[in-house]
Image (cartoon, rainbow, N blue to C red):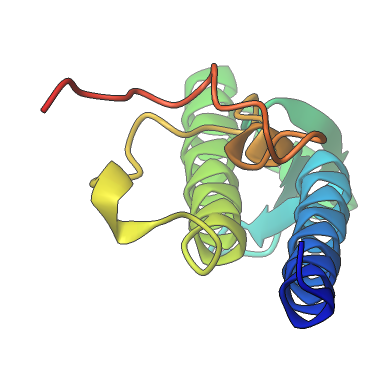
Length: 134
């Protein structure tokens, strides 16, 4: 192989590895993602993880002044939904810049989606790609 071709291939492989490292960084950010929402009255604060799972629930002392379990339950649920929506928006913001447009809508890509699978460790391994016969 001509030396200039080998140099170009080496440069491309270096770019590939850099991109793959960035995917790994994004995967770590996804795993650590959290979102917090507060109820309109400030009495309930909810933090969720990347899948929308409850990580933290804080009830301010004022919540006990009017003991209404139904209202409290709805307040917690609504605040949790707000936090989960925010977590999903943050997740999309992390994933959208790195996912090829050809993959279409990101709706199915949740927190369990492994972005490092987009680029295999071995760049010659194309077995994961949905290749279509021509």
